[in-house]
Length: 81
Image (cartoon, rainbow, N blue to C red; front, side, top):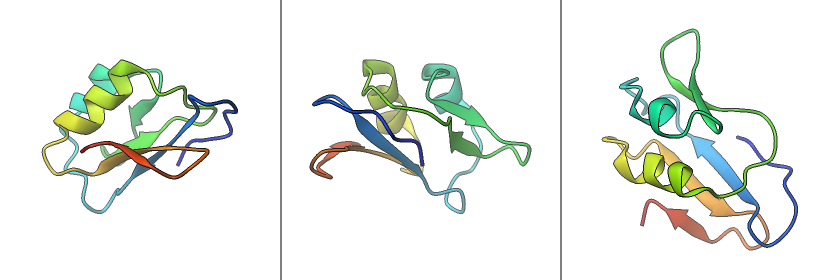
């Protein structure tokens, strides 16, 4: 999980690495926020998440919905919907 950002746009990114099938679409779409680990599965990059459009798109396009993005302040899920 990445996090630590402050402010109204700060997000928490969660990756279900058991569910992930390692297509790499997420890392290609949002390379500032997501990467493929040594095992070929997605992982959130450390550091604050800013809720970019690319991050939201990456979560939406994951074929197995292994990525979720939530507002840090409220826990409200913003992707995938």
